Amino acid sequence: MKTRVLITGAAGFLGYHLVFLLNGDFEVAGTFHNHLASAVPVQFFKIDLAQPVTVEDCIERFKPGYVVHCAASADVDWCEKNPDEAMAINRDGSVVIAEICARHGIRIIHISTDLVFDGEKGDYIESDLPNPINVYGKSKLAAEETVSDISSDNIIFRVALLYGPDSPHKKGYVKDTMDKIRRGERVRFFADQIRTPLYTADAAQAIESAINTNTPGGIYHIGGAEKLSRLQFGLKMQEIYGFEKDLILPSIMADVPSMVARPKDVSFVISKATQSFGYLPTPLHSVLKTILA
Ligand SMILES: NC(=O)c1ccc[n+]([C@@H]2O[C@H](COP(=O)([O-])OP(=O)(O)OC[C@H]3O[C@@H](n4cnc5c(N)ncnc54)[C@H](OP(=O)(O)O)[C@@H]3O)[C@@H](O)[C@H]2O)c1
Image (cartoon, rainbow, N blue to C red; front, side, top):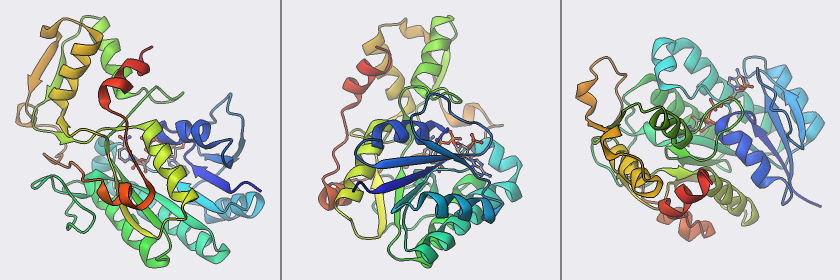
């Protein structure tokens, strides 16, 4: 019998792709809150993380072996303006999921972020001390801590900046950038925001491997194959897609003083995931070639 996997936030950018990529190897169901993803070949449940009864009902009906908890308020700017709501969804909503799963003996793969770090060091390993510098990062760190406290069997996947094809309700970074470029707009790329950008399909592969190998609970860093700044990412896009180089506007974060604080270098070391369940991300240039194809 296939393992049942429930994906929360399955109409979101990551969740939507996970549904397609994990369905088949596992028996998958998804949850939505406001947006039902159409044309998805799995069962969907409406839940509200602020209403524990809706979560309990969904879990009792589907009886998953794993919950991949993607649902969150993932918009850094919105979280900064709405700190109470951000904490309610990201921290308290995760506690709701974790408590219900613990009662039913269900393991969680909790999706967290590289933004739990302050970005002063870079090349972060799992034992490095988090120190988030914005509300979003703080709410995601608070969620990680409580999910781990509720059961040490729970898996925390800190995922890096995600890129990949669009989902129905959110444009991917690459497509969004290319749409602007095609309209002849200059696009700002920061030289001082360094990440290990992660292809959505690689995130799915990591989740699949972690489930198949029954990997122990704990924190894992899931990043892409390369460490690079947003500017280097833009230059790579320019090299592969061949648009005018002067449509790239090199910039640093200080050029936009109104912007919510973001850390400088939150790149990941991924060797724990590689050693634990064979995680190997795809090189950026091959992903970029497939995304727009
Ligand atoms: N995107 C990135 O680059 C990135 C990087 C690192 C980590 N992450 C993490 O990865 C996860 C997925 O991010 P994403 O970019 O895919 O986010 P997203 O596209 O904004 O999707 C978030 C999902 O959460 C659901 N949701 C929001 N509030 C809810 C509530 N009260 N009850 C139930 N569901 C609710 C939404 O459902 P509806 O749409 O149906 O309302 C949506 O499907 C998040 O945990 C995020 O923190 C993302």
